[in-house]
Length: 96
Image (cartoon, rainbow, N blue to C red; front, side):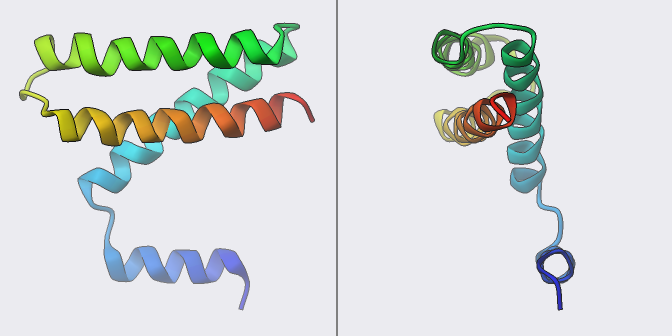
């Protein structure tokens, strides 16, 4: 059984919870943006630091004030973990 089959089976059992969907949306968006910026010639370290700072500002300033329904600190922290994972994936993918 391949790892993808196991993953698909696990998702089938767990179900795509809103937290799972939010994590993946933030992760893969950040990975795409960071890898694209690096492949376009941006230096990896400043791109990653800039993306992280933008994610922190977006989650803990903008979302806590303006997002509807109202976000909690826990929601923002979970979203930031998704962004962080995506930034790491984007740096690795951008350097390949």
